Image (spheres, rainbow, N blue to C red):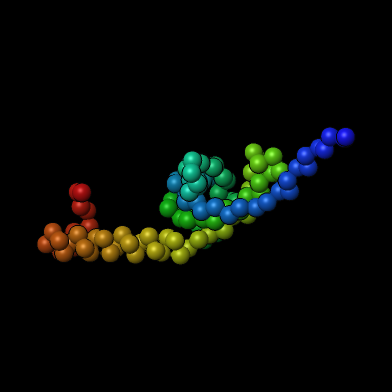
Length: 112
């Protein structure tokens, strides 16, 4: 009886959330993926969408996963502007709540 060879699985794509941690020397964006390992990816700023080029901006990264399941190839970078707006709203809401609780009007810097 002939031995069957395993056929490699076809490549697939995955979309992962990420955030720009910082921009170094005005050229390299250090991006942190929101995966299990909190992976870091360094990208040239020119590869980022025009609407997402600052610290704290959120991104969607689309990767192609190789048949060996070990390699990932970055295929697409998209801005996720709603995520940044939602985060800003949460911060504002928390600041207002802390102002009420502490009785300090207009204070934006709190020690927790």
